[in-house]
Image (cartoon, rainbow over all chains, first blue to last red):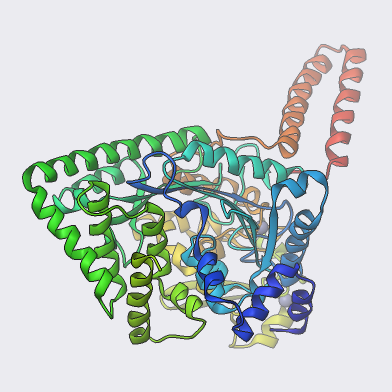
Length: 381
Length: 183
Ligand SMILES: [Zn+2]
Ligand SMILES: [Zn+2]
């Protein structure tokens, strides 16, 4: 960290200093750390929440006449940082209602950065970038703005369940708010100008996080996903490498950002999501009819392992959580709140495990800690 | 842009006088440097420090797939450089990211096939921001008035033409007081 950055940290809002200090002294109590993992999008609420975990809309925006972050000098990045800092810290009536706070990435410990990545609030790219990069968060973390990532601003709205329209409207509201105070790079032909031409136009990326276990068990998933691909949507596994979808969790998002309106983009994704939901429901119906006991056995065994295992790796945990979730959705095993199951997806990630324990853990220690955390959550103590 | 008037890609201050070609990992890099920079850097010419390379190369292959080499044909890009940030079209091909908002103007036509391949479209149909968008509206109005002005001049209706000219000046004044040219 150079002198300038260090000085910068001193002038941070008090929240971020607090986090850093607590991390260094390890004084933060475990309950507080556990509460820090939870986020609105994990709530398990909203339409279709059993199958659609979350809906996200992200808008890429840049300031006029300043180089995009990849080519910007430190001084130019600082200008962008100051712009947003002034807006967030301005405590007039309108701003106060928006409930925003700003954290400088350089002020966050590596583990805290990783936790933000695992909570889907920042990208891995931003987590690595400490030159005047920041994250602006609303209280409930539904709204976040990445500062000096690949674009000057990336406004994100992340909501539980299938709520693309609402996510777009919320993101657009904060976009209007920013635009009232920042000169955007906008071109009448090309729309919102972005560092990468894949984002130009609307700058909008809408995505849905889905749990599709029955399509996977009935081996229809690949056929269906290639159809999704053919209508111009990108599909990827949420965890794991490449096309592999660990825990039957998938993310689907639009690829085209230019030449379609925002409404067309989210409605197209919404339509495809609705079809996937209905296919998944058909497959669940089919599984129940063909082998209800087999399915109940599968869920019960998964639940048993999760409750009693002493060591568990990430992939196994994801798969077992998927089996349990399906059993809960179908009423085959005892009910566990969706909120808990969603939070478990996040808090069993390596960064969160280390954040929760306040210690650096190697892979072996993480498997031990993961099992312990899952037990604690499922036993409800 | 005339290559002889190109600015040095390293310091961005002096006119480039030296042309350096380097092949790194199979990627051809062309550099135009001023004599000072060329002497200073010698063989150690590198973008390191100025461009965070690790972020960039990922985007390259998707932009210029092997079958599409014509998109990068020297004749179409070699002279192109963004006057604002100094990024050349060749560098854009390597890093897959544009340097600034003016790059979209500077590379204009050359970006069209790429945008069409990525999006199937090339015209924004979405949201227009309130402030930056008001400029778009004003600019369209100026275009309309200019055409009308030309007609009036052709008709030798000079009094009306003078009125139109004043209107245009007023609108142009509003735009520039709102912050120079929006490109
Ligand atoms: Zn030079
Ligand atoms: Zn440029």
